[in-house]
Length: 190
Image 1 (cartoon, one colour):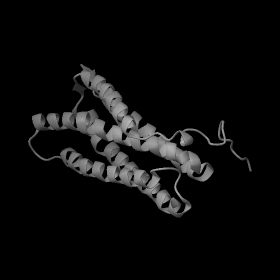
Image 2 (image 1 turned 90 degrees about the vertical axis):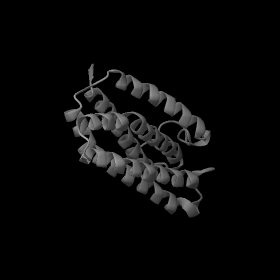
Image 3 (image 1 turned 135 degrees about the vertical axis):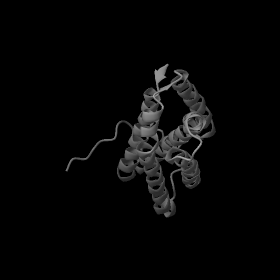
Image 4 (image 1 turned 120 degrees about the vertical axis):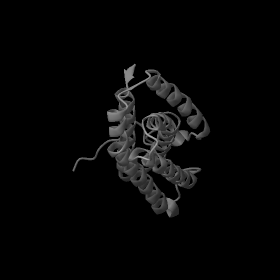
């Protein structure tokens, strides 16, 4: 048996990775708008991977244990129901953003709409992550002290499988895969 804390650490690591991508979007929007599309693609893909991992592994495990311990609705079961609704909202934001970005770098007439979509996605996703950290993860760490060691392995296996599937369905745009000026982005010192 392995502590489920290893699984919650995987979740926290994913949160950290997503927040890093959110910061990259913020920085690139002002410094190198041409590079934003590749970071958007990566961010959207990683969000989709994360949501699917939760829906297929974490939520069912929490639900199973809750059913064993109590047959009552708890804040955690409520959170899971709300989370599934929020997942759909986040996916809708991703779809809108991807539609705006289809083709090449957004036309100047779409940049303000595109920028707002990025902000909306980050706000919705960040609010979701904070809610999960306040509600679900403490419960998992406290009330599910031990779980089958295979859950962490299932997490990694499913993560690889989902990433391959999502990246296969996301069109790559090599013109935005790196800094269009070549090399590393240089910071301008004031």
